[in-house]
Image 1: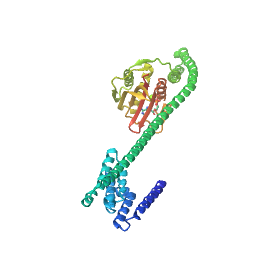
Image 2: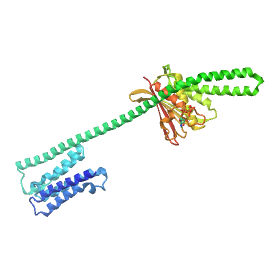
Image 3: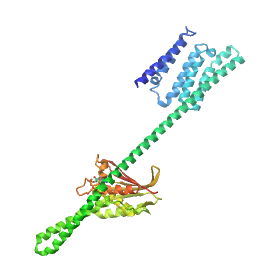
Length: 412
Ligand SMILES: Nc1ncnc2c1ncn2[C@@H]1O[C@H](COP(=O)(O)OP(=O)(O)OP(=O)(O)O)[C@@H](O)[C@H]1O
Ligand SMILES: [Mg+2]
């Protein structure tokens, strides 16, 4: 910024030096000429400040008009039509060429040219226009137009280039943003895959001892029977807790086990409706309003129906749980294009409290939960299934405004 300012000061100095050059040339003792030169210099330097009170859209025309007036005054005080200072009209002409389009430039140049030619009217009263004189006048005017067009073309080309670079920069920024998003998606799926592998082994190992404990507890119940009520009761506890653990391990293995997809062309809205129904049955007392916005002519998607239904069920269930009995769940399905891939985008937008700020990616980790009796497997299973379908899932959430989970499933 400081450099720019210094630059301008230099330009101003140069500008004044050239005008000073004009001032010391004949006619020197013409105070009006000197005043007009000073006016031109000051206007050129302080133009932005002088025109500040005027509406931005009108500044251009005012600037050119003032320059035409100043040029005309200078020519009037230095010999009218015969003035050697007539090239001062290049000033408004070049300014117009820089500010306006082709037609604007031509119009303002014609005006400058007319202002110059207006000196002909008084001159013709005293002299006759010779053939040489009129040729000279036409040449001078034609040069005004020539200069105007050359500058205008140059400026227009420059502007077009600048616009092209700006567009390019915007495209680049957008590509960058998408790349970052894709990297984040890839990181998540790698993380989940590693976690899955590690824990699948563990879960598997837990299952066998659980089966032995359960079998032993049942044998105990059978052999002791009514003879020892306390022991039978305790064996019952063991058995039911083992059942809970078994259910958890099964659910976890669902997440950890490599999925075997049975891909078939499916209508996604039908799967979503199934999921909605099953979740609604699980929360019979809830007053959740469901708004379905399915676009017509949705393409069918090659998906595993059971797994996709699980995705929709988990997301719907999370929404119901977030809204705690009252709210509105909006499900929007539309055809979409993501990074050049055709697919279907499904939004689950709820009116719950939104995802707690700062949790970010964590909510997709297995066993991450903020619920009292949650396990924290829902979203990690969803994420895994969507990954296997080569789609993606992203969450956006504003505190207090609810969360929106967007799933993209490619159709090819
Ligand atoms: N719609 C939502 N609104 C607000 N927070 C959500 C929403 N969905 C998920 N979350 C947050 O993400 C966490 C993880 O969700 P996830 O479905 O993986 O597990 P969970 O629902 O807690 O347990 P479960 O294994 O029973 O699904 C939740 O505990 C909650 O904090
Ligand atoms: Mg859940």
